Length: 325
Image (tube, rainbow, N blue to C red; front, side, top):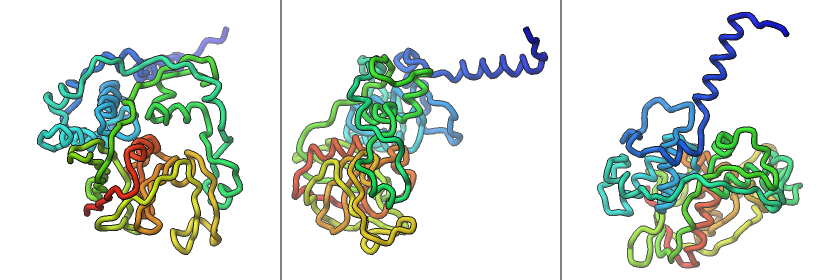
């Protein structure tokens, strides 16, 4: 047997200890306390998911104030979700996780549950998603590229968190994995939607004026601002194809012709298009849920696929959409 030099042995021991220290165990998330979370997010971002933040994100999701992707990091979308929850409960809105907010969020339901990968989870997958729209247009569908990606969206999780919770998993039918349990889709009738550009939020109001749901959103960009003023929902399309027209929309790569991009969760507008009366604008999903609120859009309102699916289930043609600067 070959003997390793002492320095190499020390490096291996240190590396193994670091990996063990950074492992995120399901029981740690269920046992985590919201009291361990600072009222304001730290200036220096953590390099590893925090069990308490995972718990907070799941509880906010269940309460109807979406944190976007559940990833275990104290990002700006967490602050937005806390502020949204405060507004829903009629509390002073500052986005700070104080004791009162934490107490109102807590519930006794487990955050983590076991899930058995099914045969259906492994169907409808594609090998890869090209960046070029001309190449996308040649595909039959723009489905998920792996079982892990498919399940991450089903459970509102970042794919890296799914993999971190399940080290060594192959994500094949019959395998048992750990997932978080987010909230059930909100129900009700939305009368009015506010798209708040400054805060990057979409707020859905019920007929009685109360908040039904709050979502983090990407709303336009400096180069392609979203509309202003009041518009209305014209209709809802699920699993829509996307018509790319460089003269009406934007120029992608070297594509200068009209293209029809096939449907799928990894399509340019994700799984839902909520059409607005303002031509070419809508509220839609995204193939990159972790980028919500972090990069601009081409003028539309972009939500995670699961958030826009939930919103679409509560709107009908005629619902007012008010863009707030």
